[in-house]
Image (cartoon, rainbow, N blue to C red; front, side):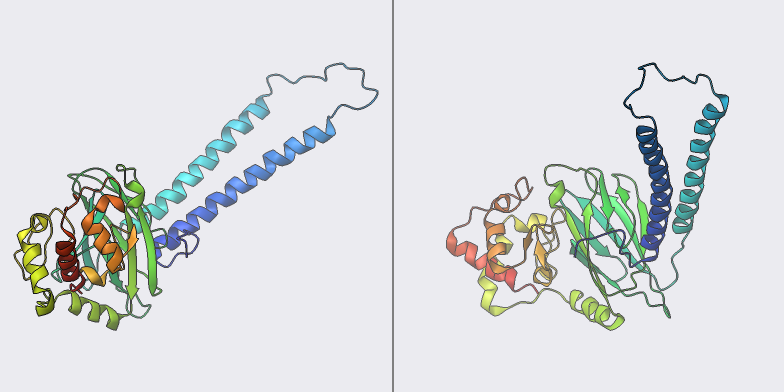
Amino acid sequence: MSPSIFDPVSTPAFAIREVAFFVLGITGVIFLLVAGLAVYALVRFRRRPGDDGREPPQVYGSHQIELAWTVVPLLIVVVLFLVTARYIYGIERQTPPADALEVTIVGHQWWWEIRYPKLGIVTANELHVPLSEPAHSTPTFVTLESADVIHSFWIPQLAGKMDVIPNKTNRIWIDPQRPGTYVGQCAEYCGVQHAGMLLTVTVHSRDDFARWTAAQQVPAPDDAQVRGGRQLFSSLACINCHTVRGTTANGVFGPDLTHLMSRSTIGAGVARNTPESLRAWVDDPASLKPGALMPAMKLSRDDLDKVTAYLLSLR
């Protein structure tokens, strides 16, 4: 399902839809009025057989007309401003309750780093949050940062756009009221792969979120069947950019790979996370995402198979 502001599932998104309907209602009335007057003038004052060709009487300097088309638009703009300011204040003044989930999201070219500081979890591109039930509201408060250029965080069904700016921290909150997966997008041009900087938000029931949290907190497994791939991975430059908890890989420039295969996509949504796509990505990321900052590893086929097999074990 395509994301739409007209299908909200979170309080900030509901507020945005209300403002959108209000603005569309006013502009719709203006359109009907202007279009109606234009059609009336075209029909009422059209050229008719037998017209003598003289110019009709012209009206100049009507104070009433000039006052009307000055005051009425001004009042409309003032009303739109006051309504919008009221809704913005209502969203922005929200303070996190004691049991709110705190998440930090860092925008990179071109992927999203997602941290859960209180839970000790770091993942990428796929945000997982609990359902906010009417009887027990559990909002998620997101701190937004950028590691490089200006991005914009936007999940249309959950909240409005929020700029992600270097050396500045912005905040946004959501309280999803329907389980499911919702699609977001970087909404500020940030380079050649701006369109390939997707984000998904999965809303879990309280029990499912607890199970997801417990699984993510476990270190990477040490599977004897892929130990050769693990040793090869640890000898490559991969560990300078990526972290795999429980190993010597502790890089911070690329996504945390500890539970790579728990994610549904790779490359921030450019491909499904399948063995074939993962192998192609390790071999040459530019084949799936032209301009990606991760270099081609130029491994032999045998080494490529070993590294891919190891990464497939990170669940």
